[in-house]
Amino acid sequence: MALLFQVNFPKSKRVTTSNWAKKHLSQAQIEYAAADAYAPLLVFEELLHRGLGPKEVPNTSLKLKIRPHSKI
Image (cartoon, rainbow, N blue to C red):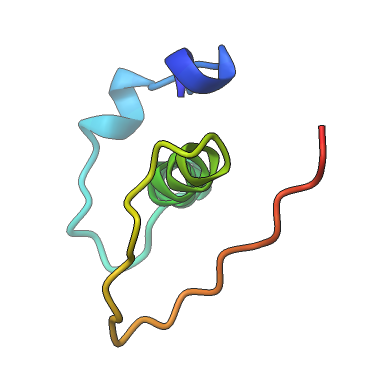
């Protein structure tokens, strides 16, 4: 994220080292997990946009639809 977008996700030690086995996660844990899961997708899309991604993406059961990149 830092190299491609000049953005760092703040990582609170309190959240990253909290109890992730709890039945109910805190709002901070949910937001951290969402950002942590979303960041690789943004990186992948940007690499594709720059022509640096793989030539072929294997078909997976996830069937992710990559959003069209807006023109800069």
